[in-house]
Image 1 (tube, helix red, strand yellow):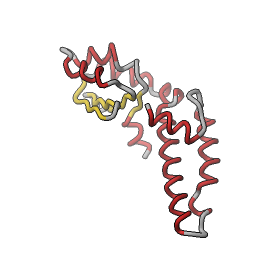
Image 2: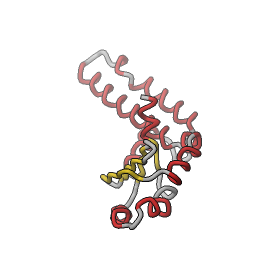
Image 3: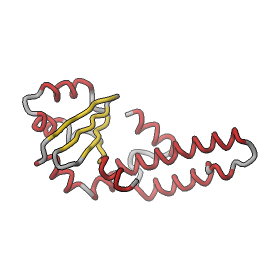
Length: 149
């Protein structure tokens, strides 16, 4: 997904970056781009504010899809995807958002439009998703984002 690639490029990390590395890079970039360091002109201050917002967004996004983060909730994820029914799903720009009956919501990235079409037309959306989506795409929990925000 372009968003994932762009965020990794912005922070200068690779796919295997661990949480500790993400945090170190994030702190370093925030020291460089913190708006309080740019008091000389309103224009540079606004630029620094936008850059720091983008850095914060990238950091939080990459933390949410990091293997260490996903491993912390893998049991809950497996329970949800195995036993909870799908209430609703949305698709936009190769991002599939699935709402489950147990209240959990997950986003799946880089889902091709054709896979989404097959999900819509499947006799059982849950069975199709278990076979072709749940363990095939990068995902993150939207519930965890709300809880930490």
